[in-house]
Length: 325
View 1 (cartoon, rainbow, N blue to C red):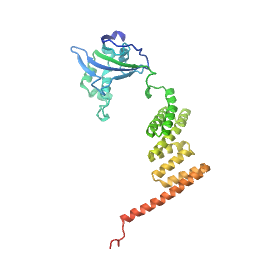
View 2 (cartoon, helix red, strand yellow):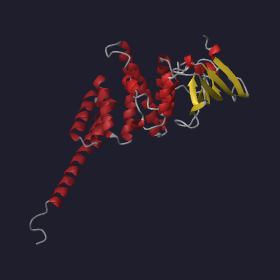
View 3 (cartoon, helix red, strand yellow):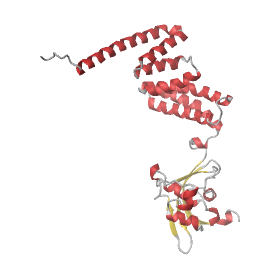
View 4 (tube, rainbow, N blue to C red):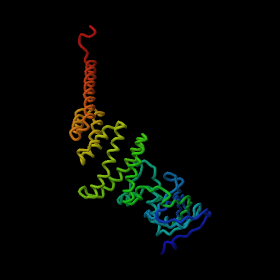
């Protein structure tokens, strides 16, 4: 039995325009799902379940309910149509429905289903459990709201090929640099973070000893260095130390990483570690001697001030016995 012969379409409201729907197109639509039999029963309404938002389907990405791709390709924008579909094409519907119903819920409220609980407890919705046990034909009433070509919307990460992700990394880095220069630190942090995440996702596909992993790491480290600078400005000193540790693990003489880690150690008040990093920096690059000496002198003053503060605090905690006599 072909897919077309298993679907019966009935137009309820004519559309305004036809847009070719091909692989990569993003389709937005509302839907109602009706169970057909002796009586017609409403199972789902996208305006009432989950986030109460239109369904968004990217054509060609093997959605669990493949018949929906076939259905929307038969429609025009603005059209409302009914599609009666044979049960052989909708066995997966209960699982799709469960996912859509639980969109936007707290994860601890969501009932997770494994093979064992499926057989003993079902998937947590009596009407869907009944549909699993007693498959039947379904009717979908679809309202096609919008169709976007692949070049009309920004792809989500999961839609991108490896090459597309790699091409995005330098663009995100440049975006972060521009935002940083404009003092838009939170936005710069987000751009750097996205670029780093892409690199790390691709690195997971490789072994550490592989040339591909090594090259990806070389791309990642300068972005991580920029990210550490943003965190330093934001006063997140422990994050800076952690990220600079990662950079120095692979590039032990990285001057910027040493300097930023030293500044973070001062902020977190790890003066010994800060002094060690500054002295290492001076050894690696003697031309930075003036800057390092200034930082060391400042650190020396901070130590003295901290010592005086600690002494004052102790005096307040342990006043002299003859005080006040």
